[in-house]
Image (cartoon, rainbow, N blue to C red; front, side):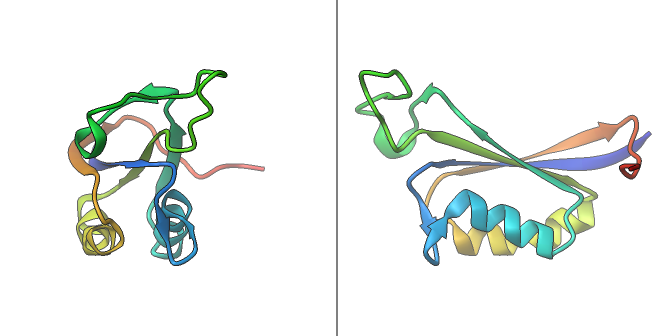
Length: 111
């Protein structure tokens, strides 16, 4: 078993970085930097510090374009530590968490 780290970035769907969605820019940058893995999850409902006055929801009658987004990245401690300054540079707000993660099994994808 190997100890890695899980970096979770909480943002909103409407945030942009250099003309593209921030979540896309984060994943592309992580890929370019060799981070082991990244996943974007789109929330169906939520609120946060930025706008606590309303709940953002994906209900049909409220077509919100500012839903919660979680960008989750996993890699070894050194790779995450080297990537964090880029994350801080790209974010105008949001929340970033870092947790130790026990990797039980990891292998390259086989075709």
